[in-house]
Image (cartoon, rainbow, N blue to C red; front, side, top):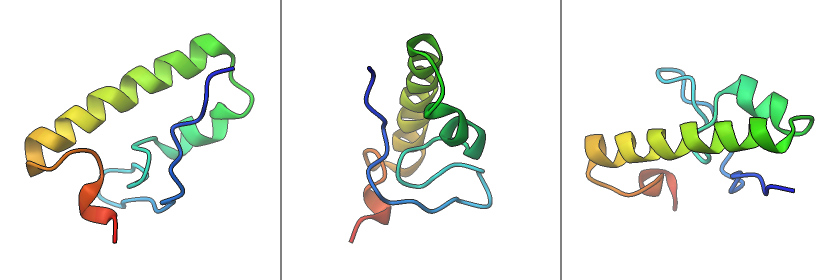
Length: 68
């Protein structure tokens, strides 16, 4: 079983439509619990791309700007 990318910073960003903690869409979060490994792998690949895009845009890795 593939582990969820959730890091318990659960807040949706209205502008991007992504969770600021795990970089998933609400649809991806909803599908996760019933998704098979193929679905979860696809979601994780999308999350990895979003994290990279975020780092390139902000100059900060991952969701560092949202951690306190």
